[in-house]
Image (tube, rainbow, N blue to C red; front, top):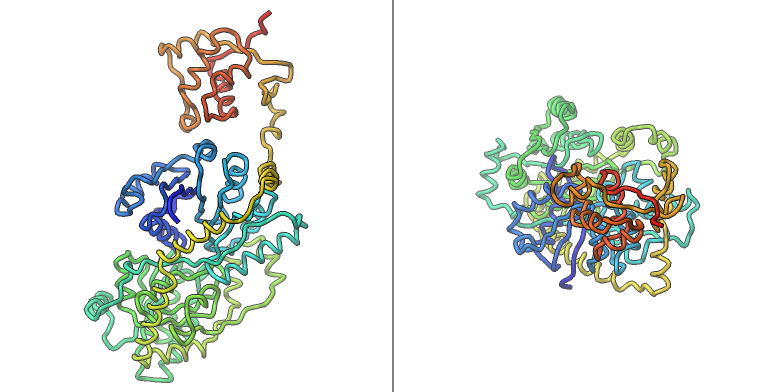
Length: 556
């Protein structure tokens, strides 16, 4: 595939605290612009200046370097959809903007292009309503959600099935199709460790030569990531079973200010006499060094907030075997007995009381209650750790296999190529003229006609044909309007309105209204090609509001 225009409503390159979604979104966009398969890349965002600043530092990406990245305000979206033959729109999350964009596309775009997104966390309780918005008559066979794992696909399918059942939705209404496409990793960001790099990294973190370092890297949070206590219990078992074993748990990642969980883990490790090191909020160069210093990657995930496991890819490409819980996306990433070990875990098959209670709890507390009844098999975890801690050749073989598996299946370049093929496949989904007509006429049941809802607020309504409830509206330029048009007086345009106010357009209105004119005729005369009538009507009413136009009696 080559050519065409890519669009999105999301920045992908985000600042602030580092966590999985941001890392994945940045990796996706950097890989897309590095491969550079499209003619242009259009971003419609709420803060264009911030995104321009972010891209200014990324001119190493071919797509950005040749000026193909175009950044717009969301207010430009409607006109762009009318004028631009987009190949696809891709969003960084299905819970923010996909149904809304589909409704706009159906009404305005010259062709029904694919709209896709990719899931990240899917456990937050308000997501039910957000996924409900995906099921409506305007969805097409060209709309899809990329599920990052088989487990995520199962959850998303379950969302749609339960919503259809609970709300009794029309079975003819479509929902976006689900396609399993994983996240990826940049191999150059985590190069295979050399003996020299390993020695330097271990010196950097004060690690002894004889220690087998078990690295747990990710968000350090009990309530929305994982409980590391089973890992401490398992390492204690290893040390009791084999006094010659010298494991060290090295835990790193983002930590929430004021959270006492890290301190509690340190205290528990001391009580259990398990060597433990904590490195909160490491810089990017420190993260690479941590993977170079480690021998084994560990993660006994237990929280439904986790849906993929990006650090597992980073560990794999760094050549580390893994010992993890048999949980969600982890089982897609670790090949048991080949690249590491999947440890069994047990959780309730249904939770009717907690399901009801969850509606009145914060998400993190609800997730914690579920995680604390997800039992990772500690003896099995200990045995997997013992095998790798006590068998350096096994660690080496599994580490080589892990790196090979990631390079073959989970590089960002490979992921992007899968998306390119998928977008092309979506275009091949048939859409005949009758179906397209039906789709374009469909109204989203949850997107209210706000103009009608609030039409009783003013004393009179200004309808599509420029009539008031009492008859046609006639207008004329005011004396102030003449002065503004001639540049002898100024207008105050409040911040934000400059994005939807066309200075040429409102001056054209003033010229055309020097003599009394019907409002509908004035709009017709003053509306430039490509400008919506609704936009021109905005300008007309704004001019009335600012004493540039005034109502007059119908000429006799």
